[in-house]
Image 1: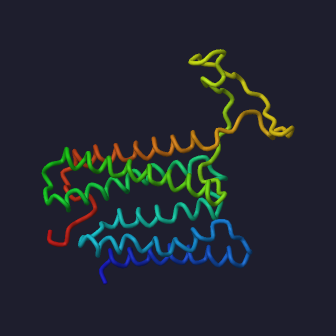
Image 2: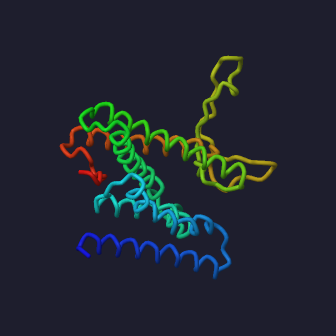
Length: 235
C-alpha cells in the first residue's frame, strides 16, 4: 500500500471512529437530538469512495480529505453543538459546500460532454449545479422544521422591520425601528428584538454557498488542471 492510500485509509478510519463514537455517546446519554444525523454520518463518509467507483475516477488526496471533513461537519455542528458555541461553523460549512459541489459539477459536466476544453460552459454548469444543490438543501431544512418540529433554519434577532403591511395605506411602506421588546400572548421574549423565523439564515446560507461556488468556478476556469481533483481512470 502506497503512502497516499495509507493517508486516505487513516483519515477515513479516524472519521468513522469519531462518527460511531458520537452515536455511542448519544445512545448512552439517552439523547435523541441529532441521533439520526449521527447514524447517517458513517454512511455519508463512504460517498467519496463510492463516487470514485460510480464515476470511474480517482479523487485526489486533498479533495478526498476535504470531502471527509465536510461530511463530518453537520454531525459535529449538531451533536457536539458547534453550531451554537461558534459564530462561523454553519457559514464555513455552506462555503465549503459551495466549493465541494462546484468541483463535483465541474467533473460531471466534463464526464457528460467528454470535452475538457469548453471551460466557459463547464464553469457555468459547475456554478449552477452547486447553487441548485444549495437551494435543495434549504428546501430540506424548511421541510424538517415544518414537518419534524426542528430548527434547522436558525432564527435571527432583528430590530428593524420594513413591510407594506405596516404602511398607512395599500402600497405604502411602513416600518418599525429600534425594536426593544416583543411580547407573545403576554409573555415577553428574553431578548430585545424580533425573530425573523429563519429567513435571514436561509438567504445568507445560499449567498455564502453561491459565493464559494463562484470562486471555485473562476479558479477552475483559469486553472491549467482540467480535472481539478477528479481524475478519470482512462487518463
